[in-house]
Length: 235
Length: 317
Ligand SMILES: Nc1ncnc2c1ncn2[C@@H]1O[C@H](COP(=O)(O)OP(=O)(O)OP(=O)(O)O)[C@@H](O)[C@H]1O
Ligand SMILES: [Mg+2]
Image 1 (tube, rainbow over the protein chains, first blue to last red):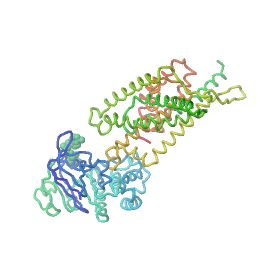
Image 2 (image 1 turned 135 degrees about the vertical axis):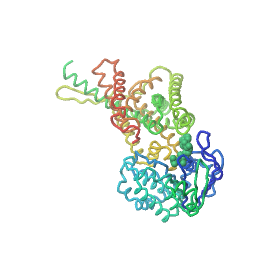
Image 3 (image 1 turned 30 degrees about the vertical axis):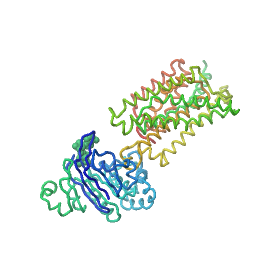
Image 4 (image 1 turned 90 degrees about the vertical axis):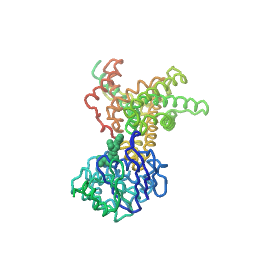
């Protein structure tokens, strides 16, 4: 459903991503792993339109994504859960979710989605009129994911949802992602530094280093790859 | 001056302060919504007030001449119309000019475009002043009706009596009404929430599908339109000329800083306080010091409470 072909992109005329070709099929759970500064967040920003590639093409559901403005891409079904959560700190949890549901599909399915979201993250229901800025890191991450789900997306881009969280909270978040994947037809694309977990949950993964895909394949193939074992799994 | 006289003067200036302050508050709300959403300091805000005044002046004259429309409420109705008209003007200015130095495009410039914004809005202020001088002339004009000279008298048995100007009262009521409606729109409506989201975190707002550039345009339109309504209301009881904006932009900034940049409630209360301060100081101090008091207060706030008194800085609510 989402396909990047030979994409070069970066900041201020300097490319960070080189010759990137990445694909996500409908309903898939794909991981992107790689070290700090590899360009993982840049990849997501390119998909959601904050960065315009210097060359290459991006297709989403058969449509040329580069012809669509950034704000309109959300309405096509791309929900970006950014690195560092980026919740609307001065707005309540409920208002954050309403903003997630700003898309046409989100408005249409608001009641259904809200119910699902509150099921997955009961704490958000309890705290719904609390300002998002006053939530703990883990709660903010849950809100950021929930806000993405409220858009009723076709694909959810998750940028390091475990960042800065305790292992227990991170595990909880990963479990929730599995639930979401099982109980919906949303495709997931996950950027993670916790490579072992990412490879465990995702059906396929790409390894990004210095802006290039150096390796890709399904779960088992990657887990057995020597380079991955040494560099990321510490085996 | 005996004590009864002093009390009477103070009460009188308090009343006048509350009434004019309400209109100041409205204009401050216009300024703060622009800052809150766009992070642009609009130095031309006073000139949009001036445009609202002349719009009211010319419309009232035109309607009276062409259609024989008259009446004590006409200037107030026309002042309200200044809102949508100046909104459209603001929309065009944003598309043609401000857009180029703020938001996404501004972030590519030095200091996030703030230098360019400073030069642009100052230039716009000068341009509008001179255009005003050219088209409207330098002679002060006014849009007064019999309401401007009519007052209710409140008296006490002790012989203290206070006059409440009717034009000022009507202007104050309308100003408060506009602030309440606008505040409600920002707090509760989908549009208002999307403006707050765009102000809070522009990147995340884009991820939600909010067109942040459009949000800025709407905020700018609202901001100048609201200030123009304030100008129109003020015109119903005070004379003006094309340079009047310079005088009032200081009042607006003082009010907004007092209230905490970006907060609607704070901006209104800030403007109200400035109005009261101005009038009360006029009874106690020589007339020439009136605006000096505002300046001193402005500096004191910046030194002592940079986040203002009435609102949380940087929050649109
Ligand atoms: N706004 C920016 N302007 C200029 N360069 C940037 C910007 N953001 C990122 N970069 C550069 O682009 C490269 C890739 O950054 P990116 O944030 O995509 O990495 P990442 O893989 O997400 O890293 P991390 O795991 O630390 O989040 C880095 O070298 C970084 O310095
Ligand atoms: Mg990153």
